[in-house]
Length: 536
Image (cartoon, rainbow, N blue to C red; front, side, top):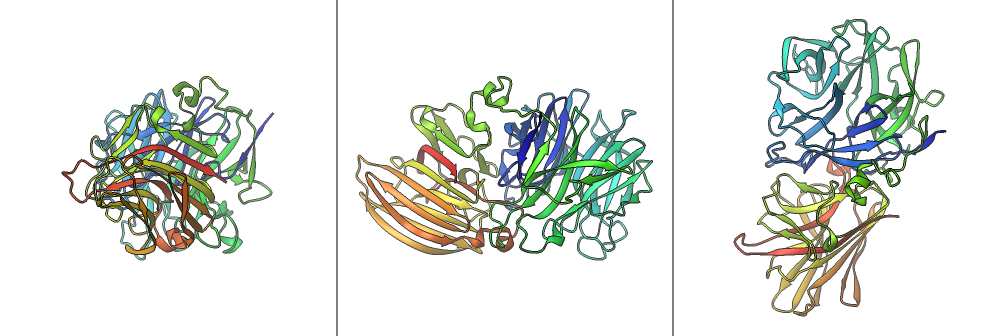
């Protein structure tokens, strides 16, 4: 028997995947940049169906993000397992640089970060050799001088597992498979038969992204180039091919001896990528001691055959989904959150940077209460915002908000958020004693454009508003319901600007709720009764 994976295996904002196998279990991590908690830990038994086991960085002490830009913070984590310990190594480009955290259970808790002295650059990975030694591999600027933007080198140094610090001397071993290549990055080391392999990305994480490989019989090199490089890319398929930016890959071997590769790619709509970089899967075989990706095709497939029995986390009593009793942990088409009946948030929920203590409180019987601060979504601050990833090109989000504790002139609402400079806000503002102003605002390059404004009567006994956002590829429709009346606030808003191609950066859209107050000393709060996400 086998199973079929639909690509992407993780849709939406799940970039820079790294994967490891522990027996029959697979664990996968992704970059989170300025979002908190950091680094989701995904779990599967068949590489096709995934659930969230937890997050790696769940404490502010592990993940300082003060004033980090949306595409700063956490870059390119690698997950590995060795002798009963899970290791995640990555870069906080905003605070501290390269660090390692460890755990004996992938759902946590994970240790405090150990920052690695002398580990310059980004995209670190670990390799555990057969003799018990551990090696650090990463990428840094060309030590002889950067001659052009992206002129970097991949380097290796031994790592002491007791201190988690570098020992011995570093060695620059590789700078890409092609001439004058840019951004050799995301390197991983593997050993198979008599060879050490370095697989890495090059060409930049955009239209020219590619996966390449080299090998040596010594970990220190010299490394031999594969004349079939790149072993995977879509850059030759033209601008209109539906899957692009393919690269930043990691290999994993199953208990049956088969090899597979995870990597990032994007699925633009009419040339615009709004959901960010997603996680895809491909088969790998070995010929002449070189990896061959999706033999006979050489590109990603929409459906990927996997030589593993199909696994359903909803039917497995040992799955994290069942053990935790939170079905929202499962990456699904529809998630309905009735916060009045919940006593714990699922691990898929994200805030921006480091939320203030007590900023979000889940009160059973009441809902999810957001306490506001003076920051807005247009700032690089610890604003009061909570949301989830957009996972479908066509989807809708519904939020039921109780405004009873929102003070006059404070602003709450829902958003489609790409960054502080690019987003759409549906804002609710109490005006006077019985009036509610509802504004739809498109923010581009940090400048607000008011799409529409409406005023509604707000009765003292009726403080509940339902906001509905419907995304149809590159267009957004916003609705509001007060009592039995539903009003279309704006229809067919062009959201091309909320794309990687316009806004830049490395993130995808998230959908969520926020609250901003005029005066911090005021006790202002919005209560989210229900939140629905539905792919269509």
